[in-house]
Length: 380
Image (cartoon, rainbow, N blue to C red):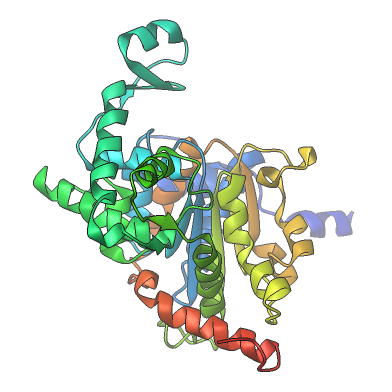
């Protein structure tokens, strides 16, 4: 009996405060999210605020699913960026394409998933589940990208981070002309020096327009090798950074991953560690913090549902970091706004790390560590 009571005493009682009009987002999460995936979301929020937002932690975010057309770019991702809570990103190209609609003044509308799609097609309306928008939105966004891609600065191969940074400047200028309201993740990332990568750059309307321009002689091409090396360099630099340089006190920095969804972007943020360890031969242990919000199951064998424990076997996550990992099985349109509101309510802004500006420096460090791992024989 005494042993049983001792074990129970280590866990808090389920004794929530009744919800009333005065309940804050912090109390809602901390005091009423007590079981099931609500509890996992509470753990994710608390881990994000109490550990991942420390000054010496570099936070990468992966973004999957049609979240920007649902308004989550404006409502949640831009505030996270502007508070310094996200330092680098990997996103599907589709999220960035639909994000551009808002930045250049085009409209998305709440609709219904139960509409007749044949009728919608006849009316020139496109549907993303329960989001409606005019077919002209696609044509105008395509025209915007083709005009931008035709500029002289795009006539060469470049990483997707450089491409998005340069496009972000054009979107930012369009925002300024439309009244100065920040509505685009691309524009916000440009202003804050947050690099954004796309793991499958041909798999979106942005990539489709780049391909179309190539038929006309445009010289833009995505350098996917640069993407792989730059993202690995970001993580290596994060782990090597001194806490003092980042505003902390610990000797050595940490890497955190916030996974929103799954898919290719999830793998791309996580494969940075196997790239460092397995391919480049540099001694490392894996990411230090891991939060994933997903509706994918692990038992189907897909990467989207793979657990942080499984990631340990690949070297993606530090084995000692497993207590600092959370998987929340929840719709991201619910979880991401709550996590964002909780973080903003409970943590001061962090100064932007402006990792985009440091890409060359971090790549040099990666090359040097690779040479050392190869006994000084690797090419410069």
